[in-house]
Image 1: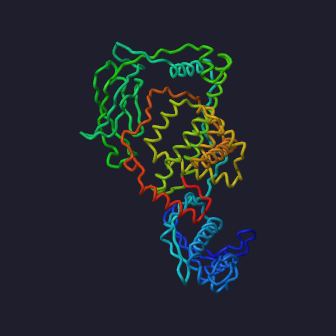
Image 2: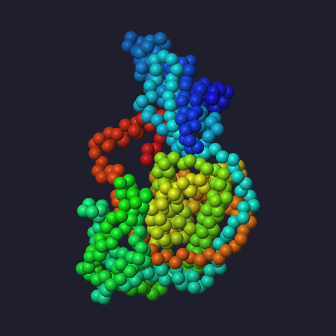
Length: 498
């Protein structure tokens, strides 16, 4: 690809004539070799010299009065880094604008290893992850199933019961533990004699299943029924294939429960003071109306979730993409955060969200692969149909998430921006708009929607910690971080380092 200099605007003077050799590694990976001819390198030097000679100080001359040749001789080495920065930044910008692929990651190269030669062409190479190339399948007129439900007072009563459980008070119980009682326990996970992790004092509800980030125990209620203070109960748990430490993937380890106390929950009544604590509701009717709104949002989320799934099943058949393992690993945390935002804005409780979170942790690679394929398809439909987000869309999205998480929208937005996650919010808005568009052109068969009867106690805990997690920041760590920041700021002084 050869770029021309016929662009207009402030950057036109820096427009490069360059050639690129783009090699396809896989459906989602490209290797790009960039060659900038010597004439272009010299042109960039001359532009820097033109700016520099106005104020340059050379011994024997007043500032700005030294001959151009002396300025070039004295400062060429000093400004070579600036020239390299400008060449790389503008080359990357032009490649992004003029190539026929859509990048989904930052270029992968080591800045310090790129050398600007004293003579000859300037050459550098990098890898980049891109959206796979595919023809958009026909998405109008899809035959889809749509879950529907008319909510009743019984549904609202069930939600109220769960809310009251979450605001109940735990009391000591002398009798042995039963289903839906609570145990206060010291929990230790061991592989032979090696302790993997432990929780010194965790309160756990006795339910049929208990789940963690990287494994679940079934028949947990059978295991713990009859337990009493002082008992030590050992069982086994098989870890998932997504465990942070590869050597434990799929391995069976011991879970040791030391029962410190058995407790029973006393559920409160619906009173004015409780309604005030729950969100400042005027009365119980106001409270029930809010629950009904949440149920409808959850139904809307379930409809969109099932449509996403069916769209993927219908449209991905002909798109047999290879998704690199590295891409899936890098995108898994981003997809996890997107799903959590989606659940929060849809009115799910923290308990429901934690259960979903543990499922996502346990199936991160599979879920990420599916989500990426969905995203690529929906993103391309959005481009074709010119669907974009508005500031009002963003504010509404953040407002709904904030309402569920108990934060102010302004504070939550600041946190999201600081974490560099605004693109997740934008993508979520656009994808939802595309789903709505598919809804409008689909042929639906309505099916009854039933809530999942959750039998799971979800614990926010990884049985096997990440071996690469940094326990303590050392002076060498800080030096490495500062070096990375300085390198990136050479390319873009306004870069935000996360």
